[in-house]
Amino acid sequence: EKGGHRHFMAKEIAEQPIVLGDALSHYLRGEGMEMPAPGLDFTEFDRMVMVACGTANYACVVAKYWFESLAGISVEVDIASEFRYREPPIPPRTLALFVSQSGETADTLAALRYCEGKAARVVSVVNVSESSIARESDLVLPIRAGAEIGVASTKAFTCQLTVLFLLALMAAHDRGRLDAEELEARIAALRQIPGLMNIAMASSDEIAAVAKSVSEARDVLFLGRGAMFPLAMEGALKLKEISYIHAEGYASGELKHGPIALVDKTVPVIVMAPSDHLFDKTVSNMQEVMARGGKVLLITDVKGARAAGDGCWKTILMPEVDPLLAPILYALPAQLLAYHAAIAKGTDVDQPRNLAKSVTVE
Ligand code: F6R
Image 1 (tube, rainbow, N blue to C red):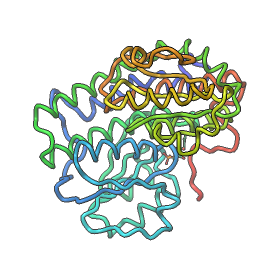
Image 2: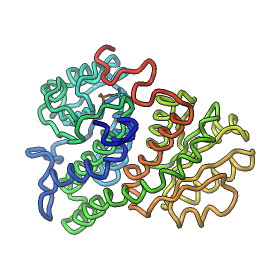
Image 3: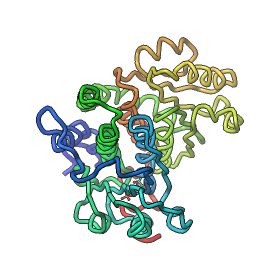
């Protein structure tokens, strides 16, 4: 049942190229885009709210960057436990979007019920199509990841991102911000992700080697900019969950506003940064870390590694990718790092202490 892997988590990490490919062929038949959301017209909305918990919430934060930059629609993202009790105003032209692997998370379900009758449409992105959240939505977009057994979410996260990216493309198209040609180019880039993930998987041994040193740390910082910022938070969450190492994800630009005080030679700082238009800024942030004796583990592409110069503790190379899609690809090394750190510590990877796969109580 683990397909030859030691843990469900390892199997679920490894099968991402396949399940992502399946999700893509479900939503993209032939050359074009059979739109994931029949009957949804993004010109009917002025704004979106996206609500979820944990990893699903980080998928929403990544998607916020996509919806805002591609479709020009304002997105508010919130964690369900805060949203549900805050009594947030929901103007009528709001699209309410809920993301949940299990479809049974109590806080997310309560947030959805709060939006019923207020939002123009209630849409959910779920893995389990027969779930409560799916049943109570106007429209359900399945992520088609297949059963996820490991408590730490891996393939559900990347499949959530894939479906959310398609939805952002659809929104951009509806709102006249993406013509047919650009749409095709974006889809072509997305179609490359499963193949790029296969290439990224080859770094597993190298990541296992660094993970061994990371596993000896007490605190770890993850840094990212733009859509890589939520991925930094996801990387930190993964590491916390299964290796019990204290980790924090920060926006690279926030470093000097506090967390840099933590940096010394015992704190690995994991920088996840494809070479994009913000890369120079990331390089200066890394220099600030190194100047304080911090150990930088840089996850980047060949161009990024060249631009970063010497001084990093370790560099893990990813294939080049459309910067907008980098969070999907870079999820893989983040997951592998947490997995191998947990192996090095000997913790229970699939059943981490104190955690449940489906949180049906608040
Ligand atoms: C993290 C993790 C949790 C879940 C969260 C939401 O690895 O698994 O943070 O993402 O409990 O669960 P769902 O997506 O089922 O609503």
